Length: 406
Length: 112
Image (cartoon, rainbow over all chains, first blue to last red; front, side):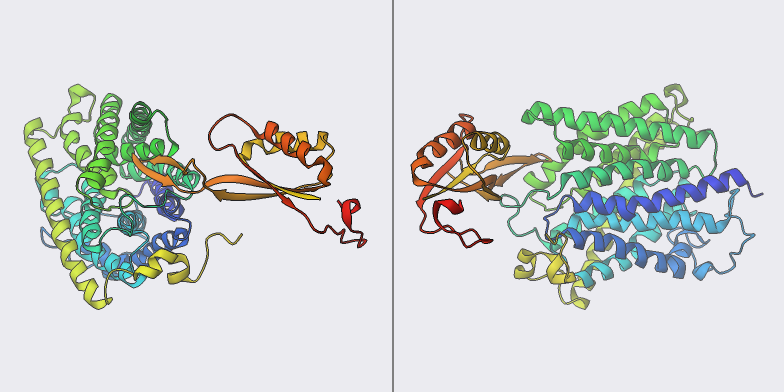
């Protein structure tokens, strides 16, 4: 039966999560690039939001959430077929239209996260084609496995708001994309610094607020689960922010704003899969572990592996999501303040299921992204803009506009 | 007449302006510029990665004065702009052939 309170909260949460992409993530990323690429980043996020919305209606929602096979949903809900004003989302107290919209905002932000891997050098047509294919081939199946009644769902995997579905798919795919696309000219020694760190802070702050919708909204009810999810989300974000800035302060002698707000996002990504299952003490630990691990991962990806995952999508989202998924198996224990393991399940058993979820999501994201990029490269006539356009900046060369007309 | 060009630290501009006003300088022109000298730019760190900032923000200050006060104006700029650190800037003095007030067409030291 429909519950008005639950529905009101889900509609609100949906609004918050769309706000995470438009404009929060767009600003977070745009501040980190050169001043001649600021509009291209905003454009990527905005276009992906529009494109995913249409595909979500056409078939992606159905492939993720309609009944089907263990690895992919069916097409019975393509174009929201059979879903009307009176239809409730299965096993919930909310209209299916609200659930459809809520999940759409997740499907929007996930490919938009990958923008961070290819900024300042990817062809616009290739961005569009990649994002569309990636939604259908990576996002929709993994969402079905984990949330839509697929095989991982059946095994009891715990991913409250998208450690696997959102952060690991985006993070793993980002690395593959960065490798196949190649580094920005001048990487790593001769790059321009972030052009507007203040913009990154504004974006991160709005992401933090939006994340309340992301995690607490994933409860799908306006009750205790949502309240606890919001609490642990906030605590983890605050903890990881302080952890990141403390490491920087100790290492370089100065606490930086960009470091502080990167820690915020690491803390938010890490708590995401755990947010509906753990208590506040676990949130402190998750923020501490996530913030520390993501900090060091940034250096390892860029300086040891020499991969230009430009805005650290894997280090922050991929690794954060993975750690969160694995720690969920521990933090869910009632003795540690969690919601409690499913009856008959042990911590070790749950950890195995979580690890299997990580492995499967990682492998599928890597393999499928590689295949998609091979196709996109042929169809779009290459993935990269030419060297001269890259040096001039994509704002002028791809979009014919300037971010700053002074 | 002399044309004095000074490249100074941006945060010293107000001190220099006040000192010059006290020394009787009637007007000056200020531009935000970027450049490097022996200091060779500086480094900034974002997410643990070091970026070499080749051009450091500076203020370029230009002032035209009668020849007999040039030396005093240069000294005023030097003492008010100085912090003692690397990157305090440079002062250049050029001969000035002509100065003209746009409104009246008046020329020479009277136009300054």
